[in-house]
Length: 244
Image (spheres, helix red, strand yellow):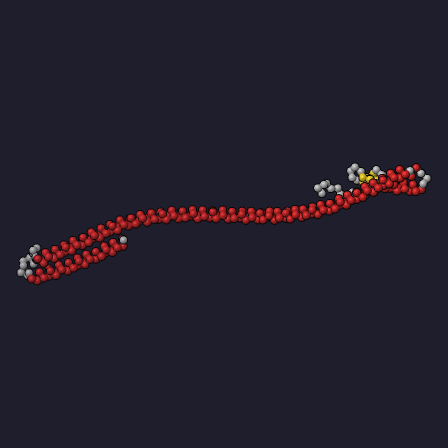
């Protein structure tokens, strides 16, 4: 806007200068004409009531008035432009302030975004670490489960083996008890028959040794085999409870 006002002022000044030069040339032309036609006049200069001069002066005054009006319009336009310039400067200042606030807010937003990204990264690392720990625990649980399965399987096998050993031991004890019962019955029959009253009999002596050998083995109250009242030196059998 100030550029337009300066151009208008220069243009008006140039027009005024041209008009002044033209008026001066017209005045010189009128003066030369009057000096040639009015040689008999005593003063040698045109009078104040010369119609050419009057018309020329009126023309100049009208031009000056027009130029003044145009200059006033230019000044008015310049004032309006200056007011608009002030308003635009104020608007520009407000926009700059708003831009500064927006930039400040954008900076804070970027900082907050960076902070949230860092927190997200930390949380992601923590989740990955917990996932690794969970995987380790899962592997350990699977290993323990497999070990427990193997232990249970081994226990089942041991139960079966112990049940077989117990059955064989019971069968052995039953056989020993049957032998003892037979020996006792046979010994009772011999005593009833009176064979024991013949000390010189060789058969009785041999039979007595056999009876001692047979009757020497019997079951104690604890279920162990004893020989002649003492615990047997045979290997101990596995003893199981009723539940195996």
